[in-house]
Image 1 (cartoon, protein in one colour):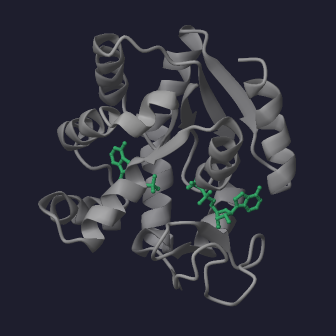
Image 2 (cartoon, rainbow, N blue to C red):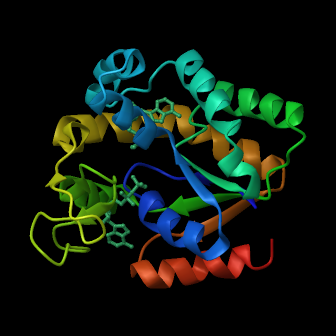
Length: 215
Ligand code: ADP
Ligand code: AMP
């Protein structure tokens, strides 16, 4: 199964991606996670991306497209994948279409997770992320069992620099202007599936599963 996960920052893509990937045996490919890993490792790509990420701006398309091109060639992705955080612009979507054509692959669905802005701000301001495995928590809605420690890998939790008020507001604006047009793009291709992203985490997964079981 090959999927795109589309939705504003804080919609719960990462949280649901974990469940989707383990249930359907596919791999999550999060461009945000890949960029953060590059930053931790001090690579050229990480250094290039830093100023855009901290300001809540998009990293330039050419950098992201080269990165995803390399990722999609990895043999582990043969069984399927869930693209989380990519594409984020019409140019990225067009580049992905060409890449898929070259690889003779087709997308099965584009999942669109819908959450209103007031709820996104509540989710993002109290998000905590694991330094080692990237899993996300919420101080109130989805806390770890032990304060500041990841349930899965025991890593330390931190607050992302872009999960502060100013970059959050900018990311929501960037989503509205640059990423939201993709909803129409995929709706016209008849592969968009809309999901109400408000509610209990398990309940939302049940909604997603009802769609994916029919894909
Ligand atoms: P995204 O990957 O779309 O940016 P995350 O999966 O990291 O979003 O979720 C954003 C924040 O909201 C995290 O703190 C997460 O724990 C929390 N969260 C995820 N799903 C829900 C939900 N259904 N209700 C409340 N909080 C949620
Ligand atoms: P995310 O983890 O998806 O919230 O992404 C964090 C940040 O990484 C974004 O605010 C962007 O700066 C950058 N980023 C991630 N994916 C992309 C993408 N597809 N295009 C451009 N920038 C991206």
